[in-house]
Image 1 (cartoon, helix red, strand yellow):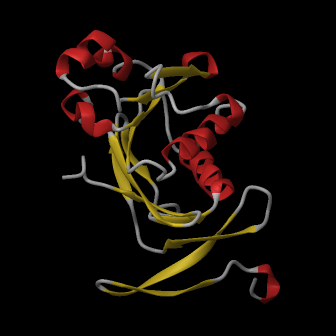
Image 2: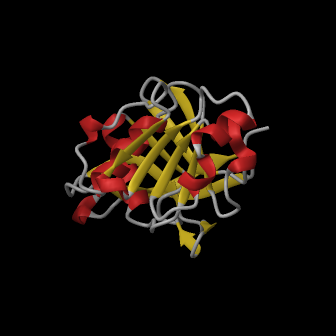
Image 3: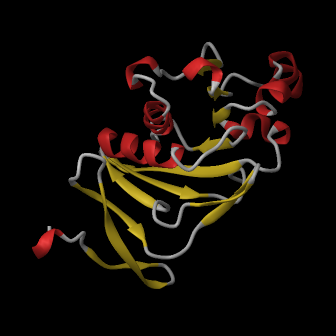
Amino acid sequence: MPAGGQIGDGRRKTAGGYTRWRRLPLADGGVSTRMAPAGACSVSSRRGSVAFSDLLPAETAGADETLALGRQLAERLEAGDVVALSGDLGAGKTHLVKGAAEAFGVDPAEVTSPTFTIVQEHAEGDLLHLDLYRIESGDDASGLGLADLLDGDAVVFVEWPERAAAWLPAHTIWLRLTHLGADHRRIEVASGPAA
């Protein structure tokens, strides 16, 4: 950590040249190994624009950092927001939701991947966690009542959203999670489902 307890910053080479990055604080007062760019980032949600400029894109180095990022993201969300989490198996989608659940006062250990149950309800219905991996058609989505689940007042996190992208509302916030190797993950705002 730099002298004076300041959060470190620096430059990181990207495809477009160098981007200014900085280390972000953890909830316990420590400094994360996660880096975030200094540029602006906001996305549309049900109520307008949600600013993530100080959070995304981000790289996490372990489950604890992914949970911390999930908590920070959840603090920006409001009732009715839908967050689509795209990424391969093991990309950290469920860990991000565990962190979000913690911001809602839910023990992260209670949050599991809902692959077989498809929908998990937490925080007395204020938080829904959907896993659409097993959805194969529009009929499956309709039978699940997906439209009603996504049009309520809960904050909804959707894993494998590409399986029912046509059912997701226009105000859906799309995040892409990428496994970088070992315990490292990259979380960034996406413009929609992966091609």
